Every structure is written in C-alpha cells, then in structure tokens.
Image 1 (cartoon, rainbow, N blue to C red):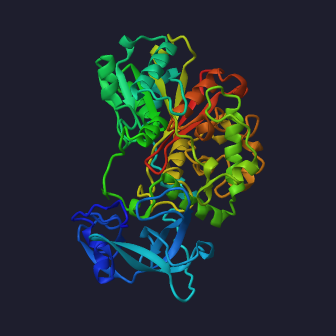
Image 2: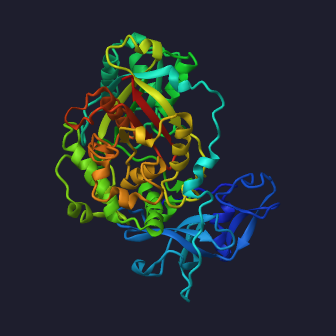
Image 3: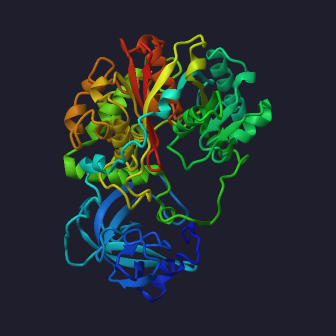
Length: 548
C-alpha cells in the first residue's frame, strides 16, 4: 500500500518531492550567498536576495534527533517506525523531517551519518534515510541562537506607557467538562460565556468585543469562532478577533487587552472551546469525517509525523542528550499535575499516580508515554477582559495585566527551529521580563502550557525558574513545583490531568488563584501569576497580578 497522505505538489516544492526520480536530493539555494533554504521560499532569509535556485546535494546528513513512534499510524506506514530529523551535510541549518530505515532503532545514536534513499509513492519520491554502510559520526548541528542568549535579541520597549495597564480580567467561566459529553460545541461555549459574563457582574448588552482562538470548527477544535457565537447571541460587537496566527491560544486575551487599550471595546468576551472527545467518538460511529484528503501541504505528515508529539519528542531527545534529562524528570511534572487534580472536582483524571504508573504507561513516541500527553476532552472556558476604570465597578476583585511576552525570535518552522527546547518559548519568555520590573522570584503560581510534559519543562527553564539545562535537578522529587514549593505549577491539574483546554483553562486557574477562590488547591497569599500558552505555533505568555 502506498503511503497516505502524500505532499501536495506546487510550483514551489515540486523539484524537492520529485528529485528522487533520478536519485538526487535537491535543496533550494540562494544564488548570491549560496545558503541552502528549506522549506523553499521566494527570498533568502540570510541575505534577503531574490536570486533563488536549486542545488544538487550529496544526500548525506547527520542524525540530529529521532523518536520511535509506537502509537500513531498512516496508511502504508504502521508503527513502530522512526521519525527523525537530519541535518544536511552541505548546510546543517537545513533539517529534514524523515524516516530512518534499514536499521534497528535500538542501535541508532545522535550524530550518526545517514544517506538518502528514495521511496516512490505515485508521483512523489519521499527522501528517507538509512545509516551509511561504514559506521560514521559527525558533529551535531548547533542552535542558531544558544538557549541562554535569547534575551540579547529582545527589542526594547518603544514607549514607557504599557498597553497592559489599560485592562483587567473581571470575569471567568467554564462549562461542564468531560470525556465524550455528546453535546454541541456551541452549547459549551454559551455555557462558559454566560458564566463569565455573570461572574463579571455584566449582561450581554455590556459585551462589545469578542475574541477567540483559533476560530475553526475542525477535528473538534472549536465551535466555529466569533461567527458562530455572534450568530447565536446577536450582540453586535464593535470589535472581533479570531485566528491561529496569534500569540498562541492565549493570544485571544492579549488581543482583547489591545482592543480595550485602543478604545475599540470596553468589555471583551474571550472564549475557547474543544470537543475533541466527542468528535473522536463520532468519527468511530461514522457520523463525521476528518478534513483533508490524500494530499497535504506538510513537510512532516508524509513521514508519519502527524502529531505535535513527534516534533516535541525530537526536541526532548536533544534536551536529554545535552543536559542529562531523564524520563523521571518529565514524570515529576505528570505526578505534580495529577496530585493537584485530585483536589479539583472538575478534573477529568483524579486517581493517584505513582512514578511506576508513569514509567510503565503505554508508550506513545519516545521518550513520551501516555501520561506525558494531555487529555482530549469536551469543554469551554471564557474570560472577560474589561477597561480598568470599568473593572472597579465589577463585583469580583479585578486581576491586572502586568506584562506580556510575544516576540518571535527563532524560526517558526517546526523542524528548522530551536533544537533543545519547545519552539516559540525561549524568545517569548525573554520578552516578558523586559516589560516589567518583577522577576521570577516574585511569581507565586505558574500555569504553564502542558500539552506534553516537555512543554512545561521548556517554560520552566525559559522563564528562569531554573537555569537552562537545570530542570533535571530542579524537578527531582517534585518538591520545587508542588503547591508549597518554590513555584507551584499548574495547580488545577494542568492539561495533563484536568483536560486539554488549549491554554484558556490555565488563565482561568490563574485568576482563581489570584482571587483566592481555588479552594483546597489554593496557594497561600498568591499575588502574581504567570500563564503561558502555545508553542510550536507562535506563542505568548502573560504576567498577571492581583490588586492586593
């Protein structure tokens, strides 16, 4: 059986996907500075020349990272298989996502020299790689920017006045959450939205802005965005926002602050809904179909790299290799989230979990097991962002915006970017601290994106709660991230145990903590909270504070 999906051939990429017809790997080249460019672009990212051509390369590369996939499958490629990242010999800045074949995965090691082997599928020749016949190793590619140097690339503030000072969170709300609730996603959005508006002491007539992420209704990822909600409510907003090209899932909140600061709105309802669990059940029953077809505009999916798990696993392996991180290091994050979830009646997974439970769980893609991955669920979370002067009249204590971190410093291509940390974390974290006089020691609670355990590890190091490469020692035993530890982490159970709410649940929990409304899981005297969202995509991070 041929592999599916296959890459969509375009006038930009056809040279790459058909090069195997004569057995030669080809990469785009800048005609002026001779840099190799991948994925193909109409301009050189290094010298900005438009003199672009194509170069025949040797087909030799160094194995930069790999993960052994155990969980996912595509037609024509069944697990287990190796998803790898290889750095091209002629220019190691170019890294290809591929499969390693003709070898025992147990014998693979980073730095191994590999060579291209083409596999024909219809009119596409997929460049796969195998170890060279003679065991050879080469230096691993280096980060374009060292992880500890990101702060030197942050642009200074343009004004002394901060837009963050103009707004506050006045209301939060959540729908019921669970596995396979079998209800419409819009009903969940409405439930959370109505709760948030009531929590702010407002009515629908007060809401003049709507903001969401990602505004799509596909694969259980949303209810249809602003269009769907406004169509149901009929509130005639003066400002709306939605889309994926923003500061991660929390980008809807950051955009709302900007709308308030510029006078475009006074009370913005931000919302996020997922119904992945129900969608997956409906797919099993044949009642819905996944989007897409046999061709995709992707440099990863044809090699079976169909999940963010594969991309993050590659970065996690490099972190393990460079800094001595272990599975147990990640395990302490999973155990912490489960312990916190035990105190949260709305969490999906509340049963106790031991390190043995974590280590012996079903493998997903090395080094990740089942409990390294967040929980697909059904649920919605909403937040009301209001003008500061209006916030004073609301019934609940307002939660203020101290600073945001949004700057993109590294490449956004998933397989061309930072090697040892989650992409789109280091730059945004460095940016945050340039917009406030507060420092990591001032933070009382951290609600850090945990689609996977490695997300959390990356944010902990990036934000300075421990040094770059020091997570192994910092996390050992789990005490530093416990509710009474150095930095209480994901106090509601995080996405790993509470459920996947794509960052908005983290904002909800931060506000609950800063208001002192978190019940049994309340951190004493919590006054400052950091909330991160996203990664792999452009992401963002928020620093929030109470008025006390």
